[in-house]
Image (cartoon, rainbow, N blue to C red):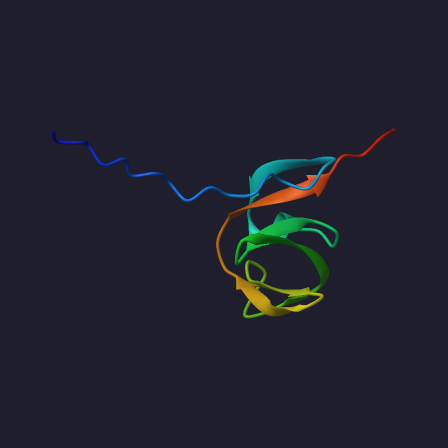
Length: 81
């Protein structure tokens, strides 16, 4: 019999515990935010401005830097007040 092939989307790992996700422009990213790169969440360790106010170079521990030119989903640790 004919079986319909299922096209499953590649599953992404769950976000880091204690974080909330949002789509943020490069100007709103902070040190300590997490970004999904190559299947793992990397924490922003440092960042630099490049080519204007709307471009950031994000640095991670154990991963190559990322040039962020447009909005991406980032995960920010929850702040308790």
